[in-house]
Length: 254
Image (tube, rainbow, N blue to C red; front, side, top):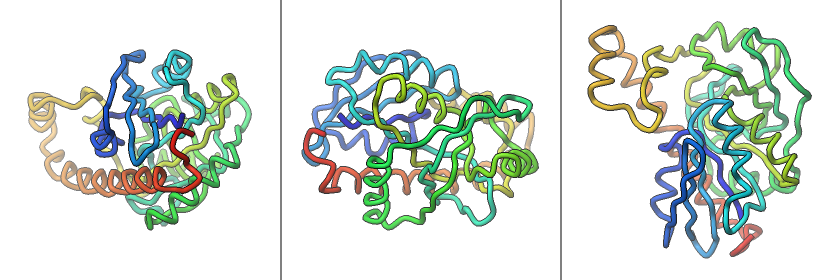
């Protein structure tokens, strides 16, 4: 059973809404939704952001019924090299992890070749801009452009996020194939507003946003730019997931 791993609810929400006969189960701090799309049975898992939630979700995957057989991480990430515009999808060539100080943690992990090949088919069918590159997992968001440049220079990774390495480790422990498709949200030269870190990851309330705007009026200029980038990334993710269930090798119950 193909199992799509996401950190945030909105990353694959459009695809999830199109699932037939959906069934939701609680999973750690998040949840998992099973359903059918174009004859394929699919799990869509929402873990919540960060290493701890990703690790907890990875450990809970054995409770899914029907069981997971292939794990695909999708979602947004920060760009770490020039030329990666919002909405560009990066197919992982390897997974790295860094600690808070930027030091390397653990070994470089490899994606499953067959699942990566399926990802290439879906990317080509989706007709979205895409490339290959290494994916770096960190403990906290890299909001500032100089942080992304520095960590990117050290790691030579293309994108940064907070979950992939933990899911790759879980896949290895479970003996399941794994790879990752990450859509760029913020390019390497762009900063992310600090306020978004304090918002509820399930969806910020109007009062949360209003308080942030009162504390930092400049956020009123940053939010429209962030919203545009988010739409570009979300459209790319949705197109790839639709292409994935249309790919002949996906199979009806693989």
